[in-house]
Image 1 (tube, rainbow, N blue to C red):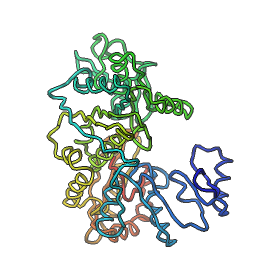
Image 2 (cartoon, helix red, strand yellow; image 1 turned 90 degrees about the vertical axis):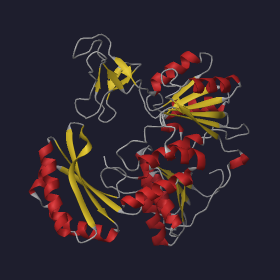
Image 3 (tube, rainbow, N blue to C red; image 1 turned 180 degrees about the vertical axis):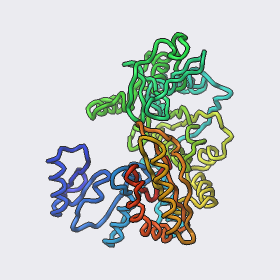
Image 4 (cartoon, helix red, strand yellow; image 1 turned 90 degrees about the horizontal axis):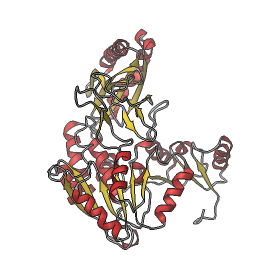
Length: 466
């Protein structure tokens, strides 16, 4: 609105129903010349569409994961192509699919080779936690670097993508851990108020004063969450404000804006938060970024975990040194020899992406292959598995050459919110055999007697296999 005199409409789920309807009508009538919105805005009617921009095109939130499953980024590309207008996919860490499309010539590639305002890229340094375990997850070298920055009147951003006080409550005497009764997951310990919470289904419980299994006193918290790290930072830096930004500390827009105003003041402070801090923010006074746990994505069963880790690290590192003071990024790890980390920090995101693309090519995984995931869930394991076994028979009967039907198997987290989940993976080198088999088999699958005893869904181009 500051840049363009034409009417601008905004469309997202946080608006009241009347405001959303008004924005939709303004778009449909053509009165609004610019529409800014979240995922569903890509479906809004625009009679004179001339340009589509997808900012942070790599972001997973563009994929609708329940109900009608669709990728807003891919819909944007298709819609622009159908209308014959340009589409611009913007990201500092493009998805591997978009990079491969650019490499193969399907997309044009525009590079930004310098930071806005002439700021220099931050320096990166690995901190080996095996040699310097430090204090409660923060190495001595890290704490010394934080101290030097705040004493110089600068701000520090500490990134830890794990809410709560500790991810595990554990009894050292007998090995008991607090687990969710409805999920195959441990309960996260929270403080203020003291609660055990499941971050998958929302189950809550009161932390026990004694171990329920053996009666030993005070089961101990294990691991780091933002609340525990906040307590450590307040203890070590009592004269410096510690501003925690996660979904527990910032529950409304007013609170978020108050914290952002405090950061914008430029006064010395330690910013601590989850991925809420990594994207879209301009913090001119932040000169040091600390990544507390860089290893979480290195050993995941999800084939996209490495890509997500790299995007997260690059995005959070981009908060450092955005003004006239040079920035630095400290990455804490127990695996400093990992080739992927070395490529990312030493050669940049492009070199890292090239390595991962070669791995994907050898496996036939996207963007060099096509996947679809048939998921099923039920109150007991047997109905979900029986449905998928029957569905697999139909799919194998419909499949020609070039399509593999793998499974069924239990989901990596088999039980979630009291329901047991299983899945069937379809893999093909090209879309045509995959879609042909689905078109033939889906009506038969829907008519299966087993389909009445399980809740099932099909996800084409799944973002995860969980």
